[in-house]
Each structure stands twice: as C-alpha cells, then as structure tokens.
Image (cartoon, rainbow, N blue to C red; front, side, top):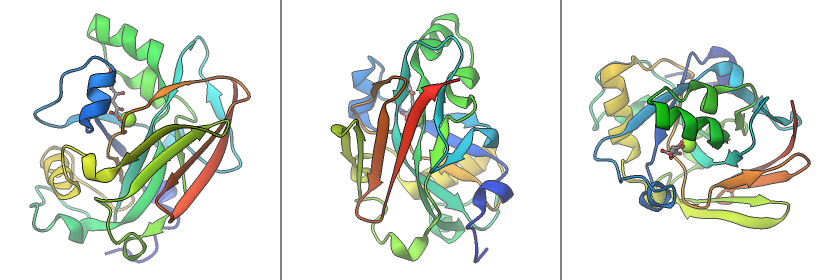
Length: 217
Ligand SMILES: O=C(O)/C=C/C(=O)CC(=O)C(=O)O
Ligand SMILES: [Mg+2]
C-alpha cells in the first residue's frame, strides 16, 4: 500500500466516475434509478487544484456543478472482492465533476459518449489528498456546495446507491485499478448551472473545503 499519495494526480493513470449513484439526483434529471453502476472516464488532464480556474468549454451554454467524494486507490488490483476492497483504498479527495450539461444532453439524444461533456480541461477540480484515517465514516459524510454563497447541494454519502466496497469491486472486475487512480462516486441532488465570474465553494464534512472561480475559456 502506498504511503504517500499527496501527488496522486501525477501517479494516477485514470479517473473512473460513477453516474446516477444518488437516487434523488437520477430523478432530478429525469433518469431512471440504475440497477448497476454507470461508469465513464475523465482524463487526468481534467484535474485542477485550488488557485486554478474552472474554464467554461468553448460552445457550452450550460456548465453544471456536481460535488462528489473521490476515492484514491493505494494498492493495485483486479477482481477485488468487496471484503478486500477497503484494503485497496489509500484515502479520499473532495472533487467536482464539472459537466457541460448541454453537450451531455445532445450526446444522450444521439447515443454518443459523454467524453466531451465530462472530460474537458478543468472539469475535475480536486482538494488535497485526505488520508484514509482522517475520514472515519466515508459512507456517512456531508457533501455540500455553494455558488456565490448560496447553498445548492447539501447531501450525504449515506445516500449512495452503490457502496464504496461494491464500487471498488465492480470497477476492478473490468478495469485494473492502479495506485493513484481516483473513483468519483457520484453527486447528490441539486446540480445546476454556473456562469463566468461565479465562485464555487464545496466541502466534505468538516474535513476539507475548497473554492474555485469560473471563467470563460
Ligand atoms: O444522465 C444524466 O442526465 C446525467 C448523469 C450524470 O451526469 C451522472 C453523474 O456524473 C453523477 O451522477 O454524478
Ligand atoms: Mg458526476
């Protein structure tokens, strides 16, 4: 197990994101509640950290915020059992899965992939690495997000449909998980648009919070 993943963004090889993992969020966008995890990938070039800005992608007229708990993998593995799953987790990260909702809606209508909607540069703002021991109840932790000081998302990871051990096990059945990989576990309800000049603040319980500003590309 890796002991220092402060630089998970450099060693990480992939970001695996889970969609519609909160019932209320699936329903707010008019989707069915999934019976198995919906997965998509974001490139590591989408990472930014505090001090950098979220850039509205060219041609996007509806950029949405999604606050999420990220799991940082510390020990590689394939076909990891649910019982073993937590031994592969090194820690956590607070993340935003910024989404060009208009691009995604168009892709959904045409049956196309979500890569552009979810993977553009700056679409994955992250906090610093949170040691596993610092987050004692990852599956019962508040996740909140404000835009210009107004609360927009206020959820709890206890409402995830698929648990952390299940997600690690399920994902590793298909994708080998490697040290530094990040799993975004889905967003609670309350997603919505942001515009140029907006300031997004988000937090994970009282463990970590961050602030990002939105600007044009
Ligand atoms: O199906 C949709 O309309 C949208 C789904 C998402 O964007 C899924 C997520 O990224 C999520 O639930 O966090
Ligand atoms: Mg998401």
